[in-house]
Image 1 (cartoon, helix red, strand yellow):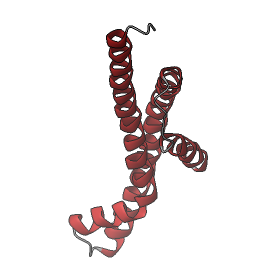
Image 2 (cartoon, rainbow, N blue to C red):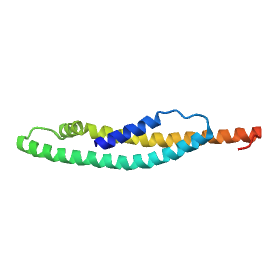
Image 3 (cartoon, one colour):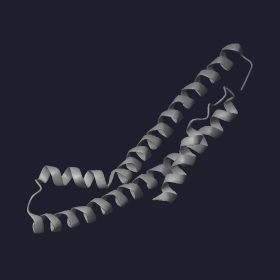
Image 4 (cartoon, rainbow, N blue to C red):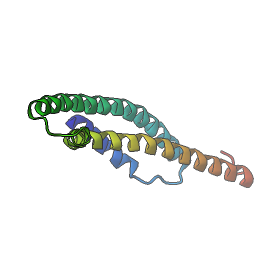
Length: 127
């Protein structure tokens, strides 16, 4: 999980860098973002796996403890388990946002490239 967090931080740092209006830089950024989008999808799947693994383990422990003690409602059990796996859930949420940010930035860059291409066509300065 720590490795996923470190890699997510690296990708997040890249996502927070502004891109110039240079078409070559935009194209390179789209290429890089495409790789990050694919990677963050895999990371998200791993984070969900870790989350599910943790919640399953905690549910099992909680059910055993409750069966012995007989005092927590199902709602209280679920709240307890969610609280225990909050770090895993945060990583899942963060990676979902990273993946979507890559998608949105790629779409924005494509629009900017189209704009630049149209400007070149109008001014007849060539590509």
